[in-house]
Structures are given as C-alpha cells and as structure tokens.
Image (cartoon, rainbow, N blue to C red; front, side):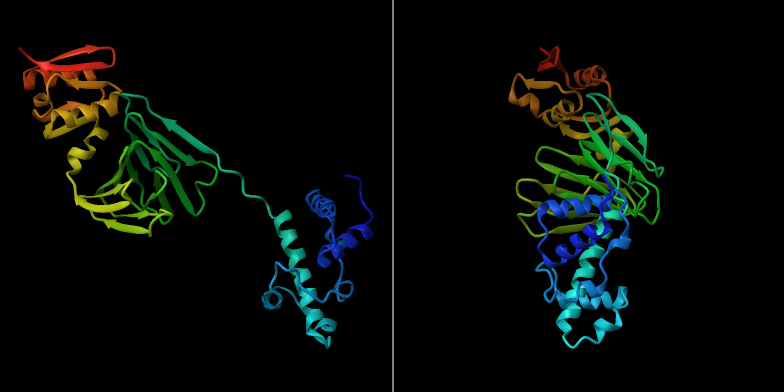
Length: 328
C-alpha cells in the first residue's frame, strides 16, 4: 500500500464516526491500520464535536460510562453545554478504540488439532502435553488443540472409547464426547465411550462432572463418585446415573476383556466393535449362552478359541464373517 496522505486518513476516521464512510473506505481504513499505519492521524475531540448522535450499534450512555474509566475526557468536552456532544465524541472514541483493538491486538492462532486414531484390534497409549495418560481402545479417534493446550483450558475430543488418567492440576480439563456431552475433570481416572445409542462415562477414582448441553432440551449435569457411571441416551436426551463394575467395563485398557455371565449376543456386539467382524448365530438359543472369564482384548483368534472350548460351540469364520453353530 502506498503511504496515504495523513489528512485523508483523518477524514476517513471522521466519516466513519459520522456513519457516512463507504464500504470501500472502511476497508481501506482497516487495511491501513493492519499494515502498521500510525495512530497519530486519529482525529482529536475538536474534530468530532459536531457529531451529536452515537452510532446505532452503541449505547451512548454506556459508552460514556466505560470511557470514564479508560479515557480522560477533555475539559472542553466536559464543559460543553450539550452533553449529547460529549456522548458523540465518546461513541466515536469507543469506535476508534474498538477498531484499534481488533486490528492491533495479536490474533489468537487458529486451533491446530492433533489427531490420533486406532484401527480395529488396536489399543494404543499416548501422553498429552501436561503428562496425562490416555489409552485408546480400537476404532477410536482422539483430538486435542496443541496450540492452546497450555492456556487456561485444556480440551479433548473423543469418538470411540478412551481411558483417561489425568494429572492433578488447577487448569480446567474437559473431554468432549459427541455433540452434547462434556466431562469436567481435575485429577482422576475415568473412561468415556461413545456408542451408537448412548455415551457412557465411568469413574474409577477421583471426581468428574458430566454436563449435557443440548439445544433441544434443558441442560443436565451429574457429579460422579468412584464406581459410578453416567449414561446419556442420545435419542431420548436422557442422562442417568448407575453403579458400575469398573473392572469389567474398563479392563480393556489393560489389554483384556472381563466377562461376568455375559450373553454370547453381548459378547458378539463387543467383538464387532473391537474387530469389525460380523457375527451371526445358527439359532436364537446360541445367542443366549452365558460366559464368565477373561480374554485378551486385541487377539480375535484367541478369544474365539476360548469361547469355543468353554461353550461347546463351533465357529465358522470366513474373512470378517463369523457363524456360531452348535458343536454337534
């Protein structure tokens, strides 16, 4: 940009205060400031005294009160017989200050979301910048803002299932799950799972607050104690509190599944989510067989072998298609 005449720039400020500047002139003025233009060209109060109305977007009285705290009003203005003139100058000053703040204030860098994704059958551990540990279950995506992590708020976005071991500190730590669930934590150990029908938050130790913000319904919240689970049903918009078997529900973080009288149908759903396989049953009765035991969480072949020997069933597998039949 060529160096413009200071008188021209001053006139643009005045026209801006009067509300007569064109869009092109306003754009030119902003560009001038963005490219390091001098503030010395700003018009003085005596050049704005003729403005008797505040811009429509400003409340003149409120502007005057604010400026009483941030600007020393010129004596000539304070002594003016018409207070509306002081308000006009105050409104213009506020408009100029607002413009300068928006232009000269260092802009906050845009968020840079670091993304980690696990594939089927994969369990991965990672360390966040503050030392907090996160274990991702299979088919999970975690994101966090690496640019603003060390500011007043730390935020993580999760899709899938993750176990958090958050280091104690005084900085707000929030885990977002889905579009409505936000988990506020300090120092604690808990898991978050986003499923097709609901979001689950299971607390192993410490304390968390689960907040639900859904524009269709009033806000909801619940504070969890160790051994409790919050479940938010997505379609019903309902938040409920339950006692939880934390060993069974979060043992996957230690690379094992713990089953306690689980039906084969429930186990099949877990294996589908964990490994991406499709499991069908030769008869409805087979789906109701019960299994209690421990299996690895990342080895489908070993899991199927354990189920086959424990339940006296036959398992036919072709690629990702699994059929469960009676043993004989």
